[in-house]
Length: 113
Image 1 (cartoon, rainbow, N blue to C red):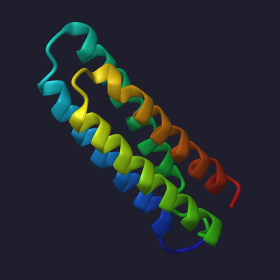
Image 2 (image 1 turned 45 degrees about the horizontal axis):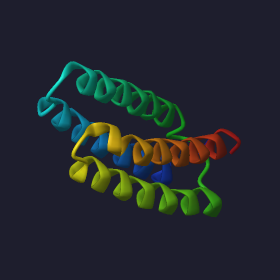
Image 3 (image 1 turned 60 degrees about the horizontal axis):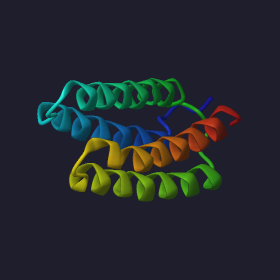
Image 4 (image 1 turned 180 degrees about the vertical axis):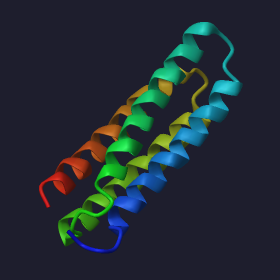
């Protein structure tokens, strides 16, 4: 196990934390209970992945993992845009799901290192 934190995992965690903060802000603006509950569920999913990434902070880093981070960042930006621009939160759920699936791929790779 390396002595230093894995920068790729730190980058994934940072992307997750940004989306969590954005969802939290969106929660403040929720107009009904269904929307608020959908946002809370997504926040729980993001939080779970923050924890998973934290447990892998000292995994070895590889080029393959760094490449996954680029995909995570792209998906994170798409999710951020969807959350920002969605008239109804339900419209943003597909982008958030894609973002979390990309994060899951990176976390699964890190688990094997």
